[in-house]
Length: 115
Length: 112
Image 1 (cartoon, each protein chain N blue to C red):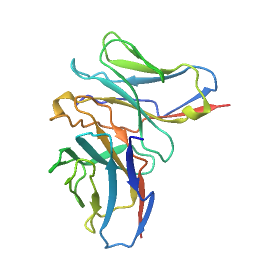
Image 2 (image 1 turned 135 degrees about the vertical axis):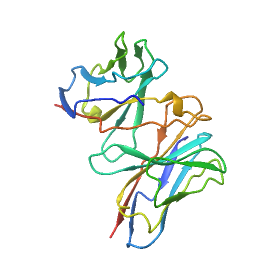
Image 3 (image 1 turned 30 degrees about the horizontal axis):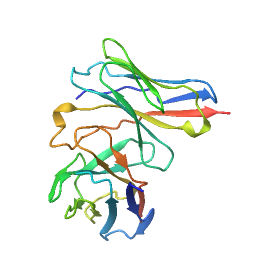
């Protein structure tokens, strides 16, 4: 199983871009990178995922390096509501059975957006 | 509105009692999951179910039991055999073929 490494915490000023790094140096070719976030005392929320191309949606952008050993989640204009714990997860493709996806959540990065 | 509901939000029990946590979804998802989260930690998988009448143990199933009699419902029972039951419990569901899981608001269980 590919493991991920994220900084424990980060700070960012409101209105600036928040760049959250994730290392996944043991990722294999058929494994996706997923990002979730968890606002305090709530359930996690899916943000974005990618395989090898950069991805963008209404919430964020995901930049994956060419060797796929690391990625960066970008929140382009961070707001106070983006304060949360952000989880980088590598989807373990071999554990997918009939549609059930076993995701491994580490400790994530605690992102604090400052006014 | 489609989504996942968990009830109650807060639950208090005495040590030695079994307690059942509710999880209902109207997203028409086949797969459902139960996670446990301790303070400052990530989520750990307790049980998951791929389809009605089927469920599999996750990483920390000891002291827990589940049932999946209906597609919409996946209740979790925390038994007296669970040594440290106080935690935040999260239920999720997912459509097939993706890693996108949709989470409920969670139930915070305190056992004294």
